[in-house]
Length: 221
Image (cartoon, rainbow, N blue to C red; front, side, top):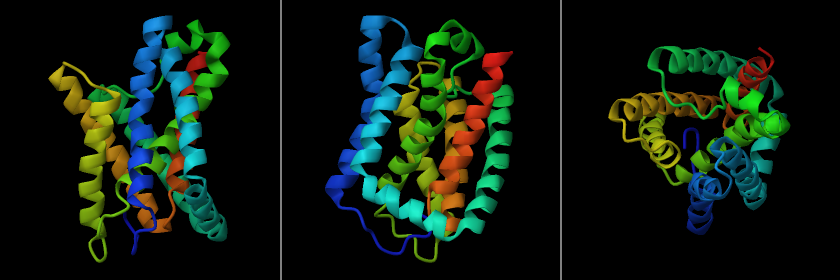
């Protein structure tokens, strides 16, 4: 992980955290067999699964929160920078790459109005926390001393691929690679923010805020 000098997580914790990460979309597909509304299924599983992940890695989350609080100015600065970068990249991903973003569309937000609060939470804070914590665990044993740039590139390639395969499998090869590119750069942005602040909180907040604003704007149009 960028900026890390020693590993603090056991292999057991890393494996279980990654299993929770991969279980969320699998559980959503199983639930969808029953209710036949994938947006609702993924919303429920994202909220429930990420809550379990946060509780399981509560000490890790607390450590990163305290780092962010201790260096409040850096947190504010890089959260703002991250929000700008992610906002621009979401625009590119949605309008130029036309990638498959994990964001409910305007039609879903309006059609499932009763579930809108759950969607706003699931696909902003929960999604950002799921990615941030899982990425930290996935890359915890990476040896990055003196080679932060290589680590950002390698980890974004690997975790971006895992994220794309698990969360957005597609038989459309073109869509798959466009989505992979979007995810890879998104992860690289989060990794860069971690590298600068030594905490995943700025990236988590930046992604959560931008995704929340996009959904809020969509739901009122």
